[in-house]
Length: 446
Image 1 (cartoon, helix red, strand yellow):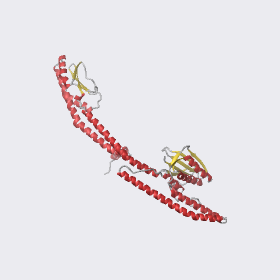
Image 2: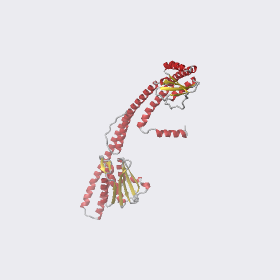
Image 3: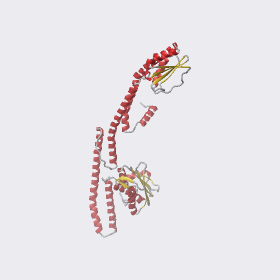
Image 4: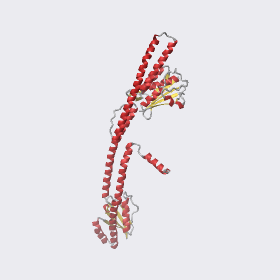
């Protein structure tokens, strides 16, 4: 059955109003039924008991008021008034005749509207004369005025003649029980949610390359999820170690014949051909280093808080020594908690990539509003078409249309940079540079 637009709009509004945290939703699931139950019990109490008792009390008071008015009408003399006072003194009624007085106008608002309504109904049924009453002016008394011949008969009665005071005690105990149950629910829910939060923090830290101590605790389902996370963490570590060991072995095995070839070329007679062969060997050695860097990934390096400006200047000086013109703009005292060698390798790849394709390179770093840092590397080279930005990050991908094999590298620079940034919980993106070439933006969380 399709929902009409109104229910669909209504449920969207409810969804927006619903807490989005597990703690808030759990609290709502537990506390909301308790609150509804308490409201229902209170409503039933007032409707079935308290209001009934109040109605009977007000009817009794209205009967006494009617009898007092009737007795005064029968003998309106001062002597009759004195008899009237003595007669109703045992009923806790204080009666006073005010000659020439008129009924007051208006009423003070009352918190217990049901009491006023009940007293109004009872007096309407028992009295034919105009009347006025006030249940608010005196904390412990009810003030009733009735129009009689020659003035007003004022009757003051204790409030317990019209109001069941035991209802306040019931409401008090109900409130105390609600607060107690809510407090217990808060403590219980908080304890359960804390276990999930710790699991989330451990997973986030692992995603950033940090290895924080974590022990499963909490409910059985949460412990199962934590144990699955630890098992996954172990498998990932084992996979990374195996990959690194494999590439390291391949690199070592390849370096041995390369070293022999370099030695033989060093002993050979220098010619144009041997020079070309030495260049090929140097390129092969550089490729092996890139393969190993890519395979090493995190490399088990510890996380440290470093001076980011100093690291950027150090990387830029390497590019300057390679012949590039680099300008650095970094905030003083800018720091980041990172794996220094991994981040240095990533920034070196980006800066050298900009230096290869452009004549001018600018490196800027600043803190972000979210508490992290952003590093921008701009160049004035030819750039990359917008639709090929993501393609540039593919491992072993090279956007050189001529596929010039004399270009140094195997297309792993951007892939390594993004892998390092994501290993820190950040990202590397590409865009058009204000200098006209390519901009690489490295964003790291705080």
